[in-house]
Length: 77
Image (cartoon, rainbow, N blue to C red):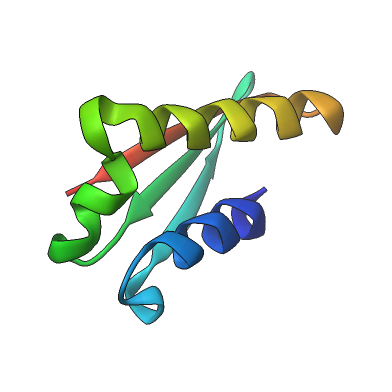
């Protein structure tokens, strides 16, 4: 799942080498913390949050398909 998020975000940003994804596992959920360069933050969030919402939807669907825990994406500034 971590690689999936990293792959998607690296295709969106201008500085793909600055993308950092960390995974935090708990009992019922997996939290993906995403960090990008400050200038790329707007590209990841998108207009009115549409891009971030789309990434979260893809992450949720991929986790459900693999039969994993609930996945949550947090974008860290």
